[in-house]
Image (cartoon, rainbow, N blue to C red; front, side, top):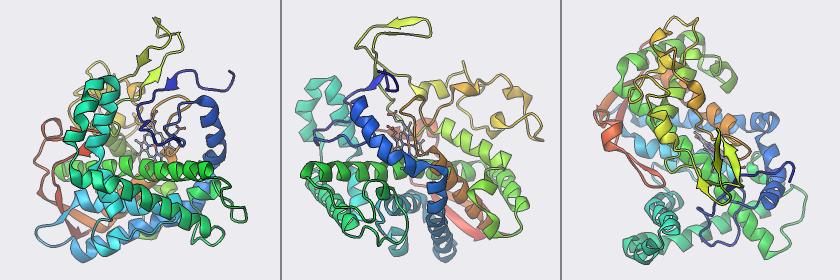
Length: 406
Ligand code: HEM
């Protein structure tokens, strides 16, 4: 079939909801139909229209750090970057204002979504090893089980609210591409369920990897003070005033881009791989028979000496161009093509531009405004102390935010 994927997604994320939305849809015809509606939401024009919302949330984060971040025991980054990423993603997905940063506490929706990570891993595993399915109920805390239907109900209610407020929303969002301002509401239960599924997926896809990268950025910044000093200097010397920092202008900073790439490489976001079913094809000279499930372990690739020198170490310099003063010839033989944090091929991340914008804005605004001070958690080791189920489990990281001294 021309124009359709050939290596199809597996049913890894099919937990029986009845509709696989966009991201988890494995049927190429159905997926193409959804993508046709949603993908324009990720165009440059649409992202420009959403940029003010990103600034709003980043500025609120900076304000909160000014208010509370200076105390000697610092602030727990695990919470604050999660609240930042989820507040922003919910608003961009369906104009939902969760106000976790404003209120300084998590919403039930986010708490439950994060709590179900281990459950989701068990459900994925049980597709490969059916015996695990029998044991799964014994591993799921009752507290979590009880909240799952409530979470889905909250999502349905928010989608209904969004449908009812079409044409009257505070700003553009991804749902604009599912329901038009002056269009009719969904005509059937099936259409409604589909819309709920897509909204939830865009919300989750829009926050989880982003909060991982924001946490990891803070972790490496306070762990490696000289890297932090280099990046801070680049940012402060590149702008006259705070308001000049935009995704485009920040995008020109070479060390910032190198730092973010190294964060992506060392602390991978997708820990579980991205399996595909072979249609019967030759890949890199090896024939993969029809029906064989194959996947590349990007985690292994990013940590392999075959592609990167000192792979377990953190060195943004490996990403710098030759004409940069901090370019290091030591990394000249790194194979940067092995790096694909957003996947490859027709199902690669459609949100990569928005993700880069958010991460650049975060680092630019934070390092412009504050001198960071490590409090605790930074002494942990990524290789020893981090674990991944479906979502990552990371050490508690406390950071102090002191006013920038220049
Ligand atoms: C650090 C940030 C991000 C990373 C590392 C990331 C990574 C990925 C990866 C690896 C995939 C492919 C999954 C697969 O093949 O199974 C993917 C898909 C996707 N991502 Fe992202 N993502 C990020 C941020 C975002 C954001 C902010 C959005 C906005 C909503 C987003 C929306 C999507 C969508 C819609 C897909 C599915 C594309 C499709 O199936 O057609 N992502 N992402």
